[in-house]
Length: 129
Image (cartoon, rainbow, N blue to C red; front, side, top):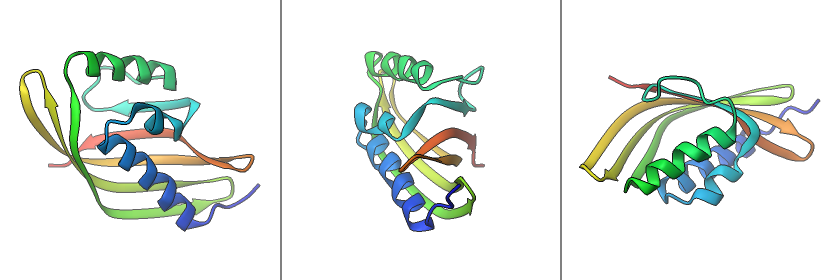
């Protein structure tokens, strides 16, 4: 197995956050493995693969949802043989059909080395109070 370079993990996480901030669907989901799982405090159950999240994302877009800003802070990278854990705090603002909303959350993204690629295999969001 290969232990990823912390800078590569930072770059992979930044690419995901930047794509999310731009509401760039293709670029955002490119950072996740097809079998990635997602746990969001705003959803009633775990999303068991990327396709499930992509369907939910499309529903959000169709309802008028768009990200207007997303700022990452308090980052930490922990590497291990075969992958890494990236944690940070995130401040997000969105526009919805009902108007603007904002969130302060903590996020964990678990990355795995797959061949020559570093891909996200799990994302977990919890509210930051």
